[in-house]
Image (cartoon, rainbow, N blue to C red; front, side, top):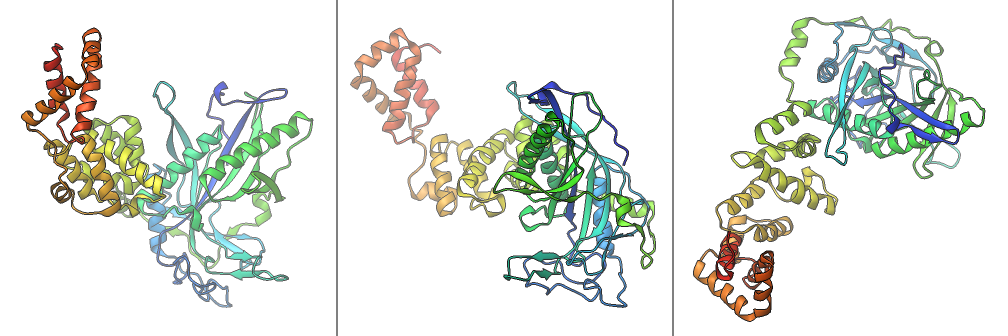
Length: 500
């Protein structure tokens, strides 16, 4: 990979040191587990959470005489991902043996791709913001390559006092290694990149993106330099499995390297681990280069070849991706960029919103989904798939407001009832007497009573007409929030002689 600097140094991203400003350079190698029922070269199951060593075939255990057979669905998933990254699809790619020895790698080598990957250069556009002016900054991050490879097993060092155990359930699981270019200049950009990449693969259905299950994790390459200078020596932070930890690891590692350089030291190229409990990185091993792995084409696998028709068939079935969906929400539904960005961040949220917005005002639907539904889910620690309020129920609440059956205030109370108890919103309004009072006679009576009981406030309104809002509030309170707010406001102004 030839390092090319495509970014102009930006002072707002500089890190101040004791001897001047520094710039952090970040590139990432993301390992995304391919969504497939079986492994890359065997028919063993990929189901998560099974007992140790139960998802292991003779191929995965590297028994003598066992030969790998390519899983075509994994190839399809890799190509779909490449298309989603607007990347070059290589119609001919080669599987190589990457030789290294570790207890959880039964073969003594990993089947990967080196010189000829299945996917070439692509790009991801991330958005940072909004800033104080409500503006977003779009930044293009280059993708160097995507290649297919096997996962290794898992060494467990906490099961026995004197021995380590090995679980081979993950051995042979298909991974897409998505390698970025060194185009990120802050921890915020790196977090936005990982968030966007996870969103894309989830939309595509090529990886579930569940970082807590290990199906998506990142090796983060960090170096620092004086602004305008060449790239510095990088350190790789291995297997970071949370977006928050990615940010913390970069912040710590950049400060660590700056401290060493400012004291006259040099940075050793090495692989490090991030300790989330201490919030720091620690050395793991010296960093290997490609020649250390002695790559050579795997003699048991022919080159992987397909034609344009194969690619076009997959391209025709791609879903609408986050950027396109966001642009459509802004253009067709009149949403703000911020609201559209929130709604497309997860496919499940976007699908929920579109179900609510169907046949309704898009901005109203967006407000309810973002502020009320997502706010409530955040409070209760649930995600959109666990929502107790269905799109049909939320849509019914919005319809009741539009029909004038309930006021906005009653709607908030109704939402909480549906959230905690469930039920049909229209039936709840009927059975619990929550209908909005639209009878002007009843509202007028309440207005007259409030005005008569507060002569001092009436005098204040004469001097300051905006004080009429106090009367509106009192009438709404007296009617239990059921009075039509527009009718109350109109009557209060008429009774107090306030001109429109």
